[in-house]
Image (cartoon, rainbow, N blue to C red; front, side, top):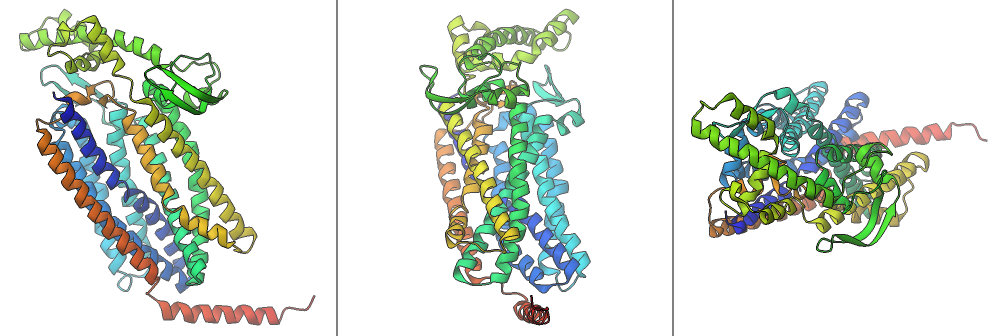
Length: 532
């Protein structure tokens, strides 16, 4: 396989996936914020909360449409650019995607129309139920997608069939309750909640700076800071769980993220800063924090985290073991199903490392003919590029702690200082609106780039997964995708900015009348209070 085809296929999928994920986090978080706001409206009857739900719902709708458009294209790419991958693991990977389409997406798509057009056709209680169902559908959709992705990171509940040359599901519940998938789901969803909270906070801060829609803005900040603080704290906790799962199931990814070249005595330290040099296999000017990596990766102070060099040597052994499985596999296929029990037993005993033997396909057509030097080269290929992983992870973590600080500050100002926000703080809230998207993209880059050279970790190398396309095919479609998605992104930004500048346009008179009566009651109550 031409390596250029593989790299172009990876680049095209990465471009479409990262464009798509510009829309997903806001959909996940804003759907829940809408449901919270409308619940307050139903409980209190105050029209300001209905106006808030409609205003933020308009922005949610714009984002939702673009997310659907980019997501559907991304799923079709499995058949277009990754046909052998689809053939090899379609029995497992296809199941959660099908369930997502049949259950979660249909639930979301069915009720989103009722949410937008049912305000005057449904009772308030029925309408808020619809809004919660939209939020449930949005998050439920993410669950099934992340179950599929989690299986690629930790392939459980499946076995390889020598005759069909495919992975076949053996236990659906192992796939469903895959600990990696569950950790990814809660971490990703919490990140979406933070994204929406920062977005609502920033737009509301802009309204306060302009002196417009201040009642809506202050109430929106109250919801965003309460919801966002809980979400920001949970992102850190759940990110720690993802780190632990990587330490259990993807040791090379964890070592690469940490630029840990040598195995350290337990507990391993965390490298807060440094410049990884992959050629020299060292990290220059490294600043270490003792014990932290040991606690994240192993949850103990006595368990080592293996370094990259030791893992490479270990993978050489796994490749050699996989060659035994590959030789047995070829004999079983030649026997056309009448292989001896001893041959089948040999394959079963070594089949866990069959994927490592496939890494040699990059260098030789028949991996059984590989030289010791080629085996070493294939083992070195199991090390992803370290410095992009090292820095993307640290950017994500730094932003995560920054969001906690922002939410704590605005929560404190909202609840204990009467909503007295300095103008510098409001300006900062506007400026950081893009930051959660940067953190989310860095997180996905870490998760997916760190899995290389595998499409399915330890099972199927990326180099074997692609379709038989030409470089010209891939280059043309890549340019078309980037151009189309860029246009869609510009359209979304234009619509978002248009409706933010326009502000709330529904229930304005009703809300203004209610607020006038409310303020009048507050003034009368203040007048009849006894003097101090």
